[in-house]
Length: 313
Image (cartoon, rainbow, N blue to C red; front, side, top):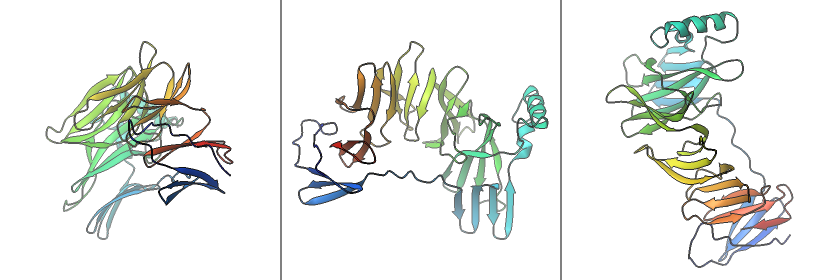
């Protein structure tokens, strides 16, 4: 089926537009350029959520799965869900310990950790951000744990707690990122959000406030936040500096097309739905029901998703 072809100029400013062809062949689009063909399937299959994460050094393994955190060296295997930490006076205040004990006894909370907010490896050290959720799925405790794979007797060591709770929602998530001299995660506090850090050199936790209300966060450092005066801000935070780079501010809602550069914001504004290249500022109005895909240096938009009748490149 022939389809409409339109060059939006979103990703390349002031450059000659090469000749493309765009056709629909059954369950996929075919994009042609100078004799080269690229197939783009209509169906976008989301990757399955991982069931475990594993780190290895020789015969030493540190694995998070349904058993909790398991550390194995040779034939020696230890698994834990950190049930003692839910009532640990080293991590919690006396009032928090009493409150947790009451809720655990009443069945509203579980003493065993049931999720992993993220993990990262630095050399032979592996860091796990272990999470406890209540029956409604809301986090009430997160603890940073370290396993040194080169220890003679490797085992989990408690590092401490970040200020606030991470943005993790999945049973096994990926919300930690490495800094030049530490490890960090974006967290929400009661009245703001920011980047919570742990320094390897000083062995201390810190927090850098970034704004009022965090709406979305991605591992690449892209975020959206609501301000106290009613606007939506989108930006990017570099791990090297933790300095926010504001990319747009508008009234409305927004999502990011993906984590790739140049960053494309999909904005629902009072004037309509637009895609905006946050590197150049170029934008294009488009049907908000269109399916959007990045294909190399181009964007493909088509509607409806299953049996497209209109498409633009």
